[in-house]
Length: 330
Image (tube, rainbow, N blue to C red; front, side):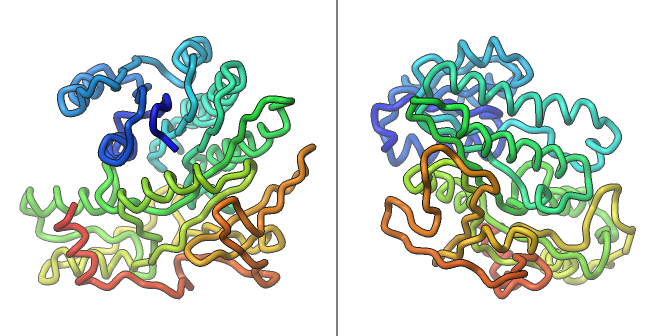
């Protein structure tokens, strides 16, 4: 569905954007891939690696609505990946996080509507479910904006959806490269926030493929959640450095012990499919949409009342040897 299409990725020089670009170039023949981001150096570096004739590099910030509207001219699909996502930094700089993650989200919506973009998927996070930190709260607000945007399309054939997933193994700023740097620098211990802490884990490639698939199955207004394994952070540290001391340093500002992707309070809206969940919107749209099935013929069923998809009580767990294999592949 991406052949001969124009695709714009906000925050396109990040880990997700680069992998998404790589897979699009390998599997499809897009007319244009527009990388929209504010970092000149990262754009220059990415352009050295991805210089195909379909590539376009736009310097711009999602805070700048006018620039976004120009960048989205003739665009068919948008992936909104731009965000300020470092939890403690957001706690100390709340308004900056709000400007990018909430105001920026609305700017993306407005630009997409003005240009008649066909499909828009916003990337979210498990931290947006029952948020306790500012980053999660801004992403929840962003999710709500993208869901509600489906009521603004009028007669346009425009759809907005959200993809929510957990920690990306090996992505910039995540725990695996952080531990790798400590080990490379000769650390004598690995810091553990809490020995009971768990996180959902997904590879970057799986995350990108999940988003690609959801462009095919989306109706607009739903939140897609992949079924992915959990892992204890202490087990992750043991896998990476089994003989090294582990020190408990306490939870950082805004952190949870366990993450949630499908809250119990949304169980009446949640459908379970073979490899993912769909959370239907709390609001209704002018055009009726049935989220228990999709255009691909996949059928879902309502989860039981009170169901919660939680990294601490997940049925699937990532074993240490599996993690090491994934890290080696990355």
